[in-house]
Amino acid sequence: DAKTTQPNSMESNEEEPVHLPCNHSTISGTDYIHWYRQLPSQGPEYVIHGLTSNVNNRMASLAIAEDRKSSTLILHRATLRDAAVYYCILTSNFGNEKLTFGTGTRLTIIP
Amino acid sequence: DTAVSQTPKYLVTQMGNDKSIKCEQNLGHDTMYWYKQDSKKFLKIMFSYNNKELIINETVPNRFSPKSPDKAHLNLHINSLELGDSAVYFCASSQRPWTAAGNTIYFGEGSWLTVV
Image 1 (tube, rainbow over the protein chains, first blue to last red):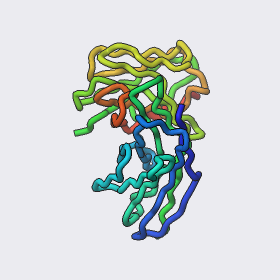
Image 2 (image 1 turned 90 degrees about the vertical axis):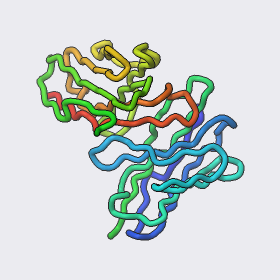
Image 3 (image 1 turned 45 degrees about the vertical axis):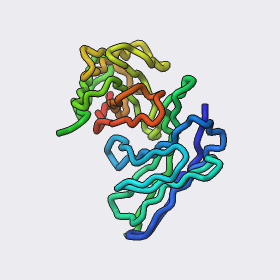
Image 4 (image 1 turned 120 degrees about the vertical axis):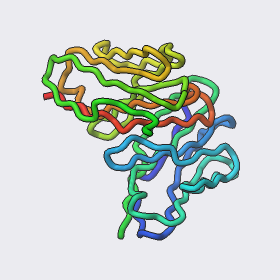
């Protein structure tokens, strides 16, 4: 199974951009990169996903390396409400891949 | 309107009891899941149903039995509760099975189960 590696924790100041890295060196050509986040005492929520090209939505941007072995979730202007655990996950149409949530990155926002 | 709703939100019960957690989704999705998040915060899939058919059954004690009366509902029944069953249980749904690339999963708010 293709796996991801993320830092255990990160801190950022409020109203500044945040770059959350994810390594997925064994990614296959058909794997999508998904990001979810889990706010305190809530279920995980979808943030963004991509395959090869960088992606933007109202919540965040996803920058994917040209070799696809790493990606970065970008929160352009962090707020206190962005404090959460962020999970980077790979999904595929092939094989028996499971949507497995690793330990993620716990993001702390400093007021 | 809540997309994925589960009840109860909190449940405290004694060892040996039998309890159920109900889940409903109003998104018109074909696939539903149960996840368990333990005290160490690891989120692990337990079961998945697609069109009322069981497609994922992880290594879960047979005291746990999911039931899907229709595509919009997936209930979790737990027999003979043990202390180790204390956890947060999340219901979720998606348009297609999780193996589908680009598939987005929507989670409920969780059911906090405490076994005493």
